[in-house]
Image (cartoon, rainbow, N blue to C red; front, side):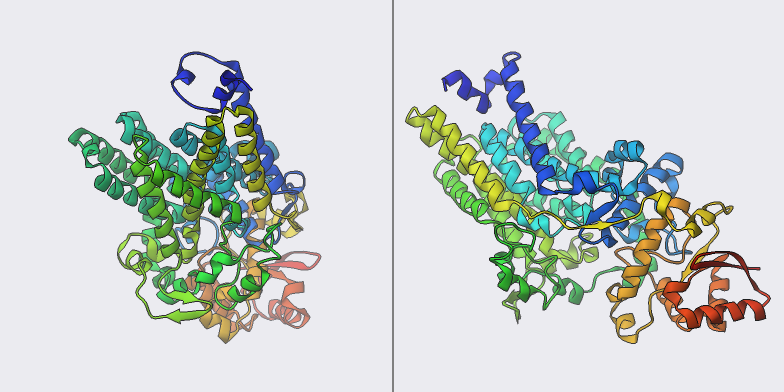
Length: 603
């Protein structure tokens, strides 16, 4: 392998000297590799994702509903975007979960081609893994000037084991704009171009409008970036430089505010909308969680099973399996050592070291949440996350501090990229060019093996043509047709007090009804989201003995027009009671019936 061929893997001024088709081929192969890896990592999602979701359908159906609602409203009534059709008669009900605006817009081609929100949602799952790879690749290639280091970083960031635990949570996969924001912040620090500041602000906005979780966390990472920059190289902060960056961030904030206002209004109207410290504590990481890999991890799932089983005692394993992987950890440590030893060899070397190493440490500490836990034992020690919870805007709405693991993954990916660059340089010094490339490719292969997931289990979800006939009938009704589907979640005092999100019947009933509403879009008293409003609690309590005077008075006062009775879910005794009610009360009448579904209308 001659020097000119080796240069294909390095980035420098020669890249800008003219067109080189060989570099185009190399970049194309890297992009194809990222696409193939995203398909392999999510298998068999690509070929089964038109009528199935990963593992279990509840949250994926919410994601599908959200994407289709967003696109529908953006096209026809964008000013009414947040007044979704669930949890009638409440306003701003889209704000009960992540709005996913950017993901929805990106899903438009898939939604347009298939007309299938499940297929579009599954496509975006694959796409977000690809975008995370691409973002980390661009960031680390820029820092190291080495494409192989960028490829390794792309693999390490996109497929960190933490991401496996989030496969059902589409917003938590949408992290690709994080490295892109940092990339253009780096470029702005280096060259002071206004376009770089604008692009950094743009990608910050795109990340916030993909998921508030990572948006708030990215704001912390950007703040750390600027503080470290001020300490390490305060000469960067010229008046012009500071004003341009401040102006870009102010414009970014102005773009975000309209999407934040509905959340603020919900917070004013719903006292329970804020996460209590006790709930945040429940989903904070334990130090032992850094040794627990997801069960779906092909290499580490079985090996770390004893540690993972301990996490179920508080919060469950879905949010607390945050083992970073052995190869990313080793490469991250190696990259930190490489950067420390060569921090003066690069113009920006000191800053890179003093940003990414502290970012790693800070992310670990913040993932621990408001209390320090070690093997399930709580220590009464003040934790920095509590400061964010008390004083940093937005953090009172976040439930899972362990999701700071995304910045653990990014920090290790960046540092690991420098380790790969170090390996590359070491072999090149001995004039072993071919060996340098092969050694780096071997490291990429080891990363892929270390992080690979087992084939995902799939859960079938019907297409629109297969929806129950009652929803096709409801679609034909005029206007918003406020509707309640009964039974609602079962009224059990224990789960009612603890929170209906822990009630299995709410999960099993309302997730499907929300998804089925993508056919008719009528207003529903029912709903499935990250937050359950007080009105739904009141409806559950009022309808606990349905049919009853209390239930009918409540529903009629609420403005309900139709009652859909699902006989299989309601049970034969209460179904017969509803039929007797129809015969003995003049304020309600049966208007439609098919199979096990019957519709009644208030007169």
